[in-house]
Length: 297
Image (cartoon, rainbow, N blue to C red; front, top):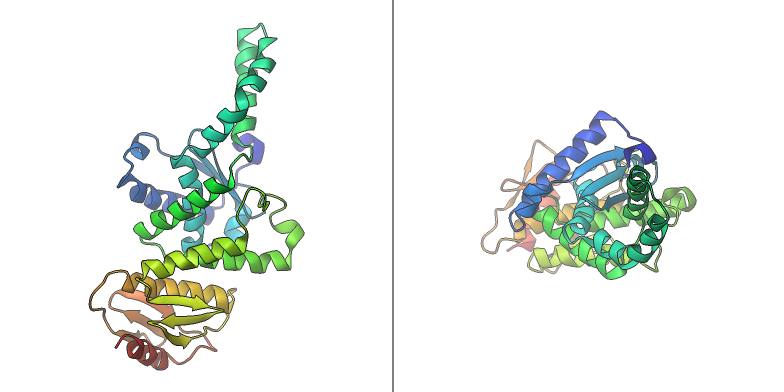
């Protein structure tokens, strides 16, 4: 795979990939100890489009372009990697390959007499199947749903899944031909909007129904909170999902929650939970704090 796709040695991208897979592996291991015996192999490849894939044998490759498009946002990268690890945990590639491989590969190998050649050709054929896009739409949904569980249990932002797909749709409008090509065909993948809305609903459910986002407006306890400003290479809508995700982490645990406070001037916390850093165009930190506290009375 490394020979076929090339390897990107960028230190920050490789650090992020290692950090994310380490954290997600620990999260998965709570319920699936077999991941300890069969850890993932992984590397950053040189492709500049938005994609990542998990093949046979717990091998994950992430396109260099995915890090660039997500601006190295670890929370958003984690949801994509979690999706691929869910494919690996459910052996989706293996199940898909086994439906198509026997007759084809046996026919091609049957005519080969030399054992050494047989082995080489077999490896080549299996590698082609391993990288093939054979995942079904139900498997995609399963991987999305499990990715949410893996990431929130690893401490990542519960709104990151919705934020990723919001960003995806915005980037697709900017450069549809060079962004992802045809890898997200609606025939075998849910639409980006369906995926965003599914993740948004899971975030709301995670918050015990307390936190929602509607057209960029953050809603807390059924009351409108505010619409974040755009900034830092991020739209208002994408920021809304990430801020709402931090609020969802607070309200996931039932019972009394800490009041919001403004710290270091423009940063809002609830107890130890970071909520947001106010940007130019946002309401003043004191106003956001007051609105949050009014919503939770």
